[in-house]
Amino acid sequence: MKKLLLFIFALTSLTISKANPIASPSIAISELAFDSDGKWVIELQGFDFYPNFHLDSIFIESSTGISKLKRFSFDGISNIVLVRNDSLLSKLTINQAGDSLKLHYYFNSVDFSIYRQALVYGNFKTALFYSPKIGQTLAGVPDFKYSSIYSIDKSPTIGLENDSVGMCGTIKGYIYDKNNQLVTGNDYVFIDLKGWDFNTTENGSYSRRIFSNKNHISNLSVYFRPKPKWFNVKIFPVDVSIQPDSMVTVDIHLLESLVTGIDEIKSEQEYVFQVSPNPIKDLSFNYGISIPVKSSNSYIELIGLNGQRIAKFSITEDRGRINLPPNTVNGLYTLRLFVNNKNYAASKIVIAK
Image (cartoon, rainbow, N blue to C red):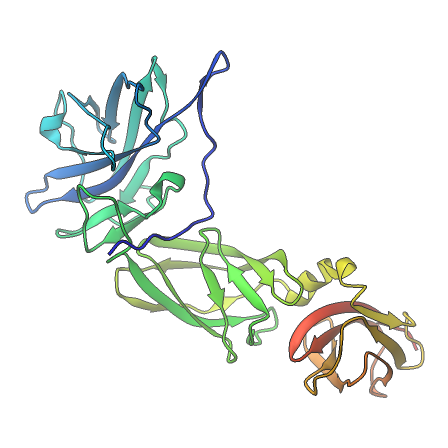
């Protein structure tokens, strides 16, 4: 059963030239495999071919040479062509242990593949993907037209459109904030550049199926649920290498405060949560909330610069006055509003007794 995954990658449509702005069909190396004798087979897949569109030529380049296809035809529903050495005008060496493969295809002498990255795998320098073992392939992920992501596939589909079966492993672990505290609850969704989302549970743990390749993660986009917004946070860089159906434990440590991220969208939340006076001079302040407060699980938190909670004040009305602890020292703080256990807004305050 084919299971397509959606990704947030897109390629800009190509044009032949300013004088002839025709949208470009594209071709990609969609799968690579080796047999027990080290002989290779490459699956090419074409996209957006038009009835009268004629390609001049197709070349495959490795780190040691380049060769032209004898013949090719992208006219079926799947637009898939299998290439072996006997499909080429001259023999091409492709190293199973690691290599760099580049596809070139021409129309009116223009190379339309210039925006396709080389497929670099195995022990080749700068490789991002594994070399396939016998019985495996290195396959472009589903919806490959819009991405340059490959995965080891233990359920090869040579000659057919790629699916996600046999491609994924699992990473799991905990997410810690800047102060090494667990990020609990479901107010935040963490998403890396490949579109993987890391949803934390009530105890701060996450579990995620990802494609089997070499993953480097150094920052995450954060989706803040209560007031739908995005902001970015840096993390301690992690490298995750995973094989199909394996499981790897990886803890994620944020290097930036989530409170800061919330504060960046504070201006749009001011209508939800107002605090006065500010600065606070007598350790008490008035608050106003523009959303209904009917739940017993509504409260305001006082957060220090280090991200730790100093005090929690239960609220039952949309307006009121709160007295701060007598030992609260002067400085910059954050007040966070929770209604029915959901974080709706945050406000910076200054205490100046």
